[in-house]
Length: 119
Image 1 (cartoon, rainbow, N blue to C red):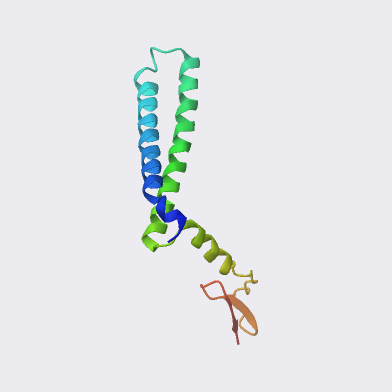
Image 2 (tube, one colour; image 1 turned 180 degrees about the vertical axis):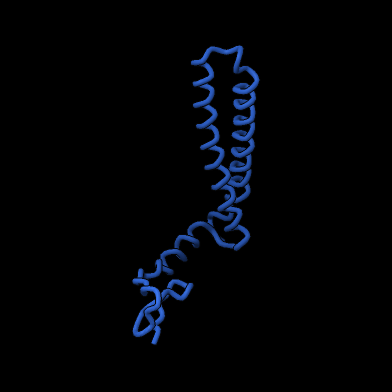
């Protein structure tokens, strides 16, 4: 049993709460920006827009964190296991693409990250 599995319920609760908090933050800030645009001075609207953009960025970060760890949970692996798997499968080496029409001794990518010789 990995230490990370013990922390999964509190982690998912925290990540879901962060998503909900910043979704409400973005909604409320957007509402103020749209509904009060004529009643508020311009500098307040600018500050509100900056706060809205920052809140949206944080919401996207929380959602990505939650989504990635939900994906790992579906796979049944932890973050550390995923990192080890990524290190075990290095990125495929780059190969030069063959010019169009070249077939004699050319190397082309075959779709799975490897090059294939064309004779």
